[in-house]
Image (tube, rainbow, N blue to C red; front, side):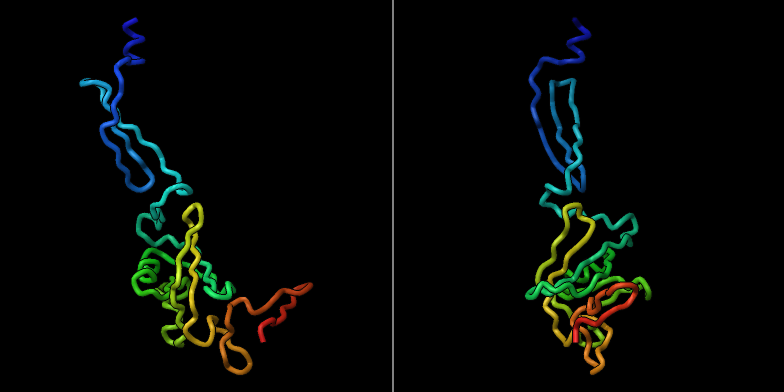
Length: 171
């Protein structure tokens, strides 16, 4: 009987504190003056109201960002952000990415004038990709140019036809 009491204590348990950080939530339970327990529970990224983006230990992990026109909902760009680019986007209010080819911050439109003003930032259920809803401030979002020298409004200006041929769909 003594063993049973040790395993299944009968005194009522009182929750004396809770707290959380990152993906863990801690509950402190006091059973009696001799028995205190800390219970850790992993929080689901799908159900939390807390931003829990994991950019890795050195904050250089890249997350994909779909950038979409706020008004038309046209997909403009698929790019990537690390923590520095994400923080700069939030601070400045303009889409800033991490250029994988140049290995540096890339504030879209800084040299061309085709800036992308952030209207809203969304995150997916697992908090591992982002959606930037933007208002284009210039002539287009793509660095590629039409025959008339104007930029395409979206980087997705071609469709794949049968075989390996591409067709320009934005004139």
